[in-house]
Length: 435
Image (cartoon, one colour):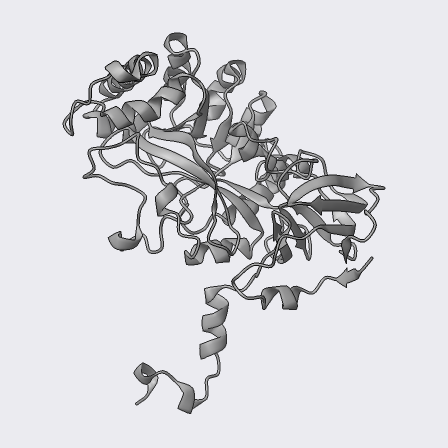
């Protein structure tokens, strides 16, 4: 057995092309599984063929397997960002690099983010260096309530980023959905019901669903994209903030019982938490929203996630409305803040294990993919991070990141720019910097 030391500097200096998939065991770890429990000392995780095959205390390392001694450091599943637009935006204000929305397109639900995902987007390397290994990537609405089909991506340094294409359908309700549907919530609700009815028609008989052209209420491709949604084969992810709007969305299942709903945002979720829990609908919540910054979030409170969890709601953390195109890494800070909130009298926060699960297994569970991602249970993708401290502390760094068992480079464009311009000799400055 070959013993390997943690060599953060060597990993950071690795070329952009990733190393080949490797079988590896990480031993002597302060190990977190990612399903809600706290860390255990002396843990081991074993990855073979890109998947976790064992993790915990007393786990034996297979003979001949490369071994990394974590030296007692924290070892966890990689962070699974619950709601982002990573990889489809380079610069938000430069339209040529921003593929989130298509306001002039005749298509809406049919739009698929997969062809737009660029693994070279600089924000992927930045977030990977902060321990993020997977992300939910959603499109944004252009001129209709339905934004299109989102994907699950990995943040690996290769050109094969999309892990699960067309993983869910994303739509807006509440204020944004009403605006896109004509100007009111009743109009939005009528649009939504009609669209789902037409999708049912398409699902029953695709050949008889006539293509109605670019001016149609629902094009043939849009209907085809919504058919698996009404059949319950693809989750319908709905951005909704107001408590009464949440109840309207939950009520859709009386008419469309197979809908597999996932709520996103849910700033007023705590006001209807018992109904959400009774419906068994998971929430990818906006963390720490404590200001009534719109008329649909008047009941905002930092205790929202803690109260929903206490009521029995399955809750994960996402960054909708918080620079989800670039700063998905903030979910670690938000999770840590929720741990701190639990110590404030009268507030509702999360225990450490709950908070960490909300940014690892939580998003995967919300999308029905907990068997594949988000934890170190056997069979999950081999996404593992070694940290130099508690990953929910703001000053902690990732010192090694594995995606599907492959060690990843941690170098970022910011670091390269820092090194180039920190103390450049005058004769090596670019022309623009010479006088």
